[in-house]
Length: 242
Image 1 (cartoon, rainbow, N blue to C red):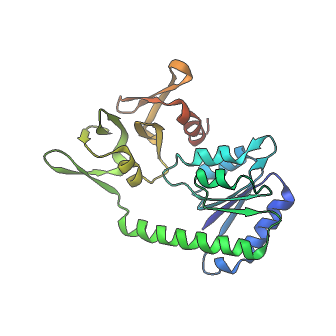
Image 2 (cartoon, rainbow, N blue to C red):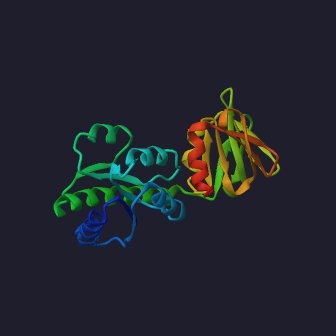
Image 3 (cartoon, rainbow, N blue to C red):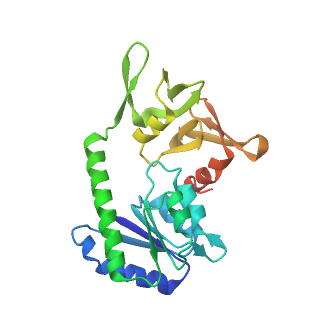
């Protein structure tokens, strides 16, 4: 399990990391710990490593932990988020944006243990479900037949008038499946949603061009052009380390 602690206070990070290491809830789980003092550093770690669990402070100098939490909602494989903060009046907002848990400073070992026990149970169940169903191929139902597509060959997918079009290097497939369905099956970090109606394989982006209203236009290796929605631009830039 990979755990990231994000807090702008070095002492708070050190204390939380110590309590996590001591927790009996992780006794049977190999753990790698990471730490960051701000959102930019955290983004770099999240881009490089598949973080499973994130302990996130809300007040990060001039930044807000909720901003990072909102960004992570766009990931196909987002980590569980436990807000670890001195403020008890943000709990409702935290759970509204998908927090897994909410713990208060000063930290207590029993409370950390309880949060970790719940998180490990959730992650274990999720891993077992993924292991039994994950595949390198995608079975897509068309009007007249089912086709098998290698996920690695998918360049992009877009939705128009209720029709999902999946494009590979050489072919296009149209289905009545939804983009949400596809996103659930494309869990690899190479896939990212860039618009409410589009997912792309970042390994197949050929060019990134400026577009209208401060947006971007992606030219894919197969010639397909995909517009990047403004609310997705920041996440794309982070994934591409721009």
